[in-house]
Image (cartoon, rainbow, N blue to C red):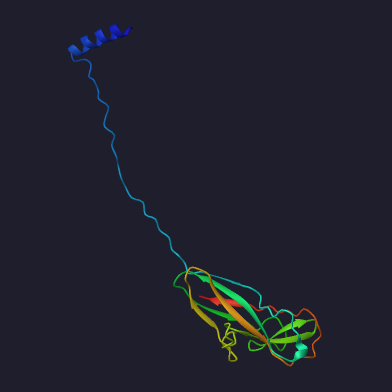
Length: 170
């Protein structure tokens, strides 16, 4: 069938009402909504740098200062309290006076909750204090101080170390 024949046949059929020309339907749109939900939870992350005293000459009998940094990041608006234990210095170490060890040798030191040496940082016992804050959603860096008390002149040379466990309760 050629186009001419088709047009002629379509004209004849349409004259008798046998062909209906169908217009394409207009596109329809249906709409709806989708909810999005999330429950932001209170969380904290704690990191620290070592409390360093560097090379320490105990034979001078003087106190020796050191510094370290505690970094706390908590969800914005989250209240938190940071505490520190007595450390791994062994028997005789307390939160008020910790001990670094080198073999059986013990070097006493004090850890403060700020760089002002205002309060000994611990767990709130034995005259120690905790560090209190509120989360901002960003890192909050707190400079901490330490002191090796003077008078520890009988200790041998060596690398003295301790590990203090830090807890942030929120």
